[in-house]
Length: 487
Ligand code: BGC
Image (tube, rainbow, N blue to C red; front, side, top):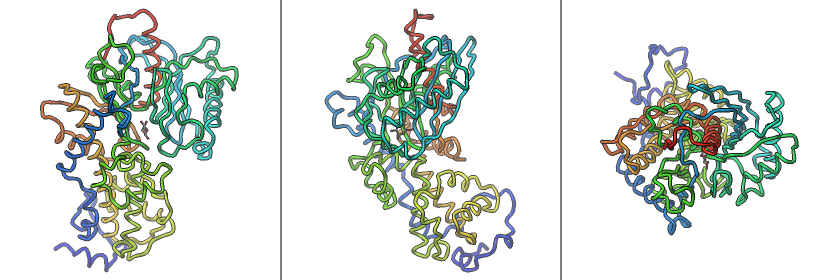
């Protein structure tokens, strides 16, 4: 007979004494009932998800409508990207990718027969710069760019086209003009909100001197991901959604021009990519019924209280912190670690989202869980503690995957295409062991049954995508090769 969880907690067997078999599978039976009870609000039923879908659908429609957009929470920014790559793109392109603690510069070459070559370099964006002056941020970008150009001996004699992936809510008014609506994630630089970030970039490039570049596109990482996936699925031509579940969370999709009432671009083309910025969903209270005390706490102490509530329940910048807050709360109530909490565990941000992936990747004997807990200063957790911690992680990651699935189902139902490939990127999707599976399962349940979809890891979406948007823009400036657009 299985030992009762409560008893096991009292016995606190040392790990060396445990004789668990290899091929371990997580068994929720030893998770204590009170932990299960406390985690219940994190488990969303299909009824709850359906209500969320209805509200999100309405919010997206409001974002698309001319009259409703100004007060809409989900902004549905027009990207001015109307053509997907069709394989005829050629040449060398530079790409900049800014969206998190790392900034990347890429040099991409596209050639015949889908030839693709990429050199890239990662640069840190120190925290002081992330929350400092805007001009310093753009000077930092220009400095990294200059270093890259020098190191990689980029031919500077003619202006190279450059795609700029700027992964923040950007109200675009053209392919090369976009005003920052608000900072998200860990950024809060002064003097950038309501400014055209392409102008700020160009000015910084000018200040640097000696850089010969032509900014041909500014885009979001979700758009880049869609483009990058579209390049890989050139023959099926059905990549219509780009999704990011990384530090932040966002999605874009291909919408009919006629439905996008604010679109003032080329109306002879039938489609345009819409950057939903669904991370802001719930900022009007629409998620209040499912937000927990931990979500409220995360929000209150964040750089942008009241903003990006959907993102704060789904993105990697927040998931680890949600787990930490739950652990601390439950330990304080003596439900974990016999009430002992380490300093590390009390430290904001100390439990990274990568720990969730580590813990849920555990194959044998809670080895990874133990490692993580040790790293967090908990030296002798019991077997039940480990199971409980893993359960908490599962509930938090499952909730994220299910909320994102609800969002995807809204887009799929809305487009009503019979077959769609969803390009996905972001550290949560990439490194969590079951995120993909959880999303496929739940999206299927929530999507109209006659719609087929695939989810595809869009490798390096934000970087490659920037070069591809730049390449398509340059391609379309020259006489068309095959005479029709690919969307
Ligand atoms: C930003 C989006 C971005 C997403 C993923 C969010 O915080 O608002 O523009 O696509 O993060 O990086």
